[in-house]
Length: 157
Image (cartoon, rainbow, N blue to C red; front, side):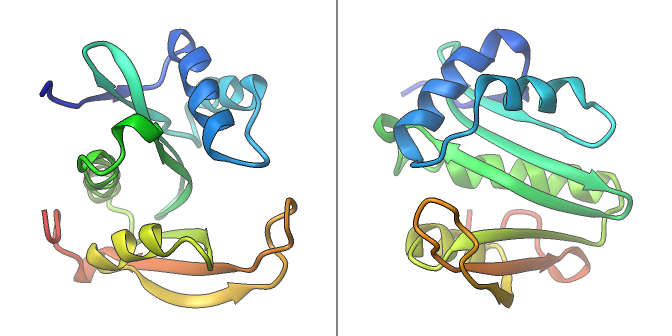
């Protein structure tokens, strides 16, 4: 099996990222939304995970002064269960530490137990709940936060 290579997302990756996004999510991000994240190098740090040069995972995160907000972490269906999400999240945590950020926050669907377990394995804890957060089905979101001063770099890896 080929190694996952993580690098900054570029315009050349967007077509593949949009295809993964459309396959996984009811209300997918658009081509333009991903391109905006690439252009916004001050706030956004989008990454892709490549296997043999093909995008199989991506993460979108905003670096806001001393904190990071994770907006999107996804792995193509055919590549799930191989540790790619864990590797992508590890890299994001590493970047946050390098930037001396104090925490990482995110919202996750209450029904997404697989993602919740992943985040908890890294030390994220539930900090609250957003009622009717997701537009597609009015599902609630859990707010999860990782305090970086207390987190190990690659918990459970």
